[in-house]
Amino acid sequence: MSPRRPPAVRRCQLLGWASLALVGCAQLRPPAPPPAAGHLAALPRAADPIPAIVAPTSFVPPPQTAARSARYTVVVNAVPVRELLFALARDAAVNLDVPGDLEGQVTLNAIDQTLPQILERVARQVNLRYAIQGDTVSVVRDDPYFQTYEVGYVNLSRDTETTVNIATQVATTGEGGAEQSGGNARSGGAQGANSSATRVNSRASNRFWETLTANLAAIIGDAGAATGDPLASAALVVNPEAGLLSIKASGRQHELIADFIDRVLLNARRQVLIEATVVEVSLNNQYQAGVDWRVVLAQTAAGVAFNQTLIGAAASGVIEGAVSSFTFGYRNPDADGRLVEATVQLLSEFGDTKVLSSPRLMVLNNQTALLKVVEELVYFSVAVTNTDATQNGQGRTFVQSEIHSVPVGLVMAVTPQISANQEVTLTVRPTISQKVGDAIDPGPQLATRLNGGGDADITNLVPIIRTREMESVLKLVNGQVGILGGLMQDERRSAEREVPGLAKLPFLGPLLFHSEELHNKKTELVIFLRPVVVTQPSLDQDLRAYRQFVGTLGAPSL
Image (cartoon, rainbow, N blue to C red; front, side, top):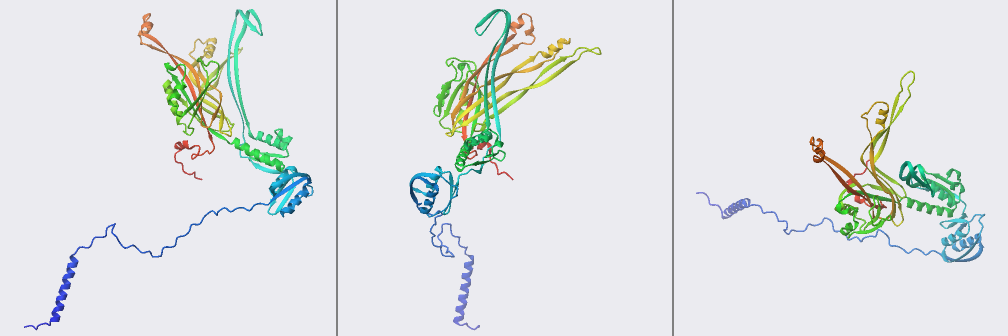
């Protein structure tokens, strides 16, 4: 029989077994899920205390009232200028430097004015100029001195001349003819000529540096420079290559010169973007009299202002080649030309439209811009020279050909004048030429026949060119559209159709199996012109409408 354990020992064993059971149950229990996102939790504590709110400080100090300049009242009559200057310096408590050769008298009534204002009025009466440096006033005689000006303009002289010639001449011979000249008529055997000629010359001369030199010489009164020869002047030194002017003049003259140069550069640097669209309309049968612009305006009346001026005396009829000048202004000038495209589409109501060209030109003020998009057609002129036979041999024939070319396409010359209120006066001359056929030069065949060669299969083709051109002077506002229209022409074409073989049968062939169709076509040329004054020539400013054509451009690499 084992000894019986005391009750205290048994009690400790029971507690140990109970603890082991609880630990086992705790290990079998699953872990608690993590808290959800919206579960309330204790706020994190900042490691450092929150700093105090800082009061904002102003970057620009508040404006302070400037001290009122001292003012003086001076009333003098025929007082020597030296005495007046010393009196002003004593009252203003400033130092004064006066040259010994300064002379002149001053009559002045100045009430409650500052010292610079009084000195400026004195300088207008006496030949002097002054400078204030701190508390010292320096006065000197206004003798001429050299001062250099920078003129940023290209060293270029341009002369442009355009000529339009219209000449016809028909020679007449015969008996029993009549000739009349100067009111006297004679009859009998006569030989004369019937001729008519019209000539229009337009000249534009742009000589910036020569004109500027002559103008400045007139301001300073230099007769040597006014003749146009800068080397003959000792008071005006011009260097167009570097863009510098060195002028010897008085202080008053230098003020006029600086203001004049600023105004000249402001006007000369104005530039305009000219958007042109040349459209050819093949008129249908309903509108053989030309494009009816009233119909166009009826469909675009919400955004178009219209004015028409007929040039010539035949306003009620249709004349071949008559030109009408239109002013076609859009009430929304910032539409970037989209309304011009809409108007071109509306012209299709009058017939088939074809845009011949749509150029864009950026032109400086009073400079002529020339656009030429042509194809050079080549033809030859042949000269044949025969030499007489000699005792030692036969004669010789020399053939010499000379190459010629004629442009076919679009040539447009534009000269703008831009005013200060953004009105643009355009001198425009578009020329559109087309090849319509070829003419055979009879010279080679005649030369061959005269030399006893018979009929040779030698052809020299000369192109036949149809030219349509106009010259006009228009005055438009910035963004307004001018239209030149009414230049119409008739085109006649013939087309032959036949049944091969049967058309050559005698008698019945040409009547039954051959036909000839004549087609008449009338076209009208319409030119749209839209000047846009450019003050900021960048893709972010005035040229933003063309940004889509440029795309994304990176910075240039140096």
